[in-house]
Length: 277
Image 1: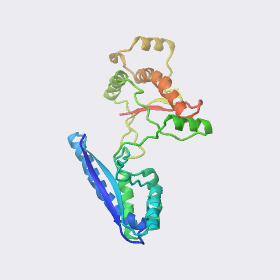
Image 2 (image 1 turned 45 degrees about the vertical axis):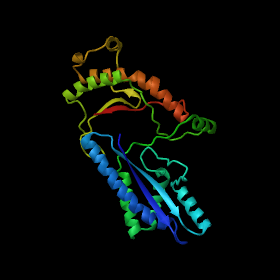
Image 3 (image 1 turned 60 degrees about the vertical axis):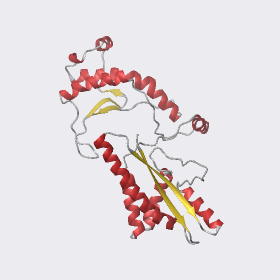
Image 4 (image 1 turned 30 degrees about the horizontal axis):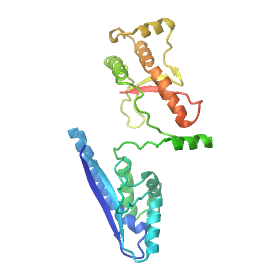
């Protein structure tokens, strides 16, 4: 993929330079970067290429008061900024910006309220809107062994979003798609309006409250075990049962144990399984 590198470089000269003064400049630079990032994303959709952007942030503090300069760095560090030395490589998050947005965004909310009705406050509102509209990959929690041991030793449950790759093999995905083609051709997907955009949800429930939408009796279990061809799927219940049969072992034997490990809880269960097309 083609990566466009951009740098936001800010120089501080005066004794009264503080976080608010820094952010008055930085927010305008970040807004310009997000405009560029959005245009690249639109080009990526049109041209199906891998062009992306990355932003590095640097601070040149020429303040003669070393204590004031150090305090500014510390304060910015608390809200998610990271300024590598000349010998260090910038650390990018997987969303392309050299800062910790999980720390910065809560601060930005309070900054907007504090500067409401001013030029800084209005610019910060625009920035907040643009950050919310970004089309970047979600940054999953880093569930390494040390964090897992810490969670288990504390005995506390955590709310965790964790990436678990390869739950379904390509062959299973192909099999699901073939059954879904039958569902789509017969217009069995739900057309109830989506709660977010009001458009048809194209939703298909498979398991609700831990129970399959349709029970599979022994005769059907045997038939599905032997393999039901797509051509034999003549009813809506048959399609749902076939999808549940294909997906169930991978969800309950692979995904569920992983979820229990991440959450450090043996009582976690799968509640709802659905497909959206």
